[in-house]
Image 1 (cartoon, rainbow, N blue to C red):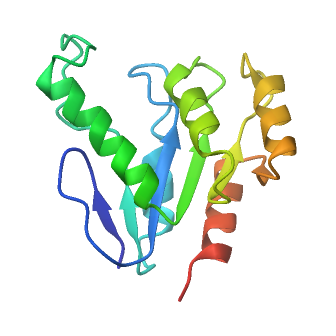
Image 2 (cartoon, rainbow, N blue to C red; image 1 turned 90 degrees about the vertical axis):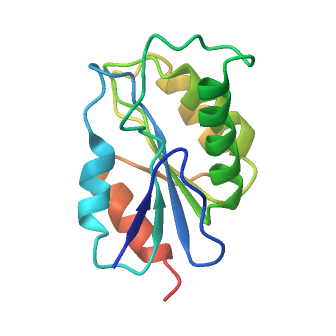
Length: 153
């Protein structure tokens, strides 16, 4: 059974892990993370989902804000620890942090990207993926299939 870990819970040590990177922008992005969680519920994996249940949009997004800093640090640690980074760009969002994360982890060999037609920076995403040999899929279902193919059993 999969184990879903959300911010700012402690990250488990050991076990195969997947970070669900990509569009969140509350109210704009679909809850694509839930679809992946459900599809992987019978796999023996840790799923790091950065969509924080108790997120407060009034928190100042600056380093001095303890709640914000804890969220960002959790994400950075989880990204580094993950065996797979599955990234989805929702075409209804701009997802600047996801673009940053793509750049940070492009050379790791851990990424799978889904960037549908209509995403405002699809050309940039496609170019980075081609340069660094990052596999791209066309759908969320494609992300799930590629994740399942890579899971170490």
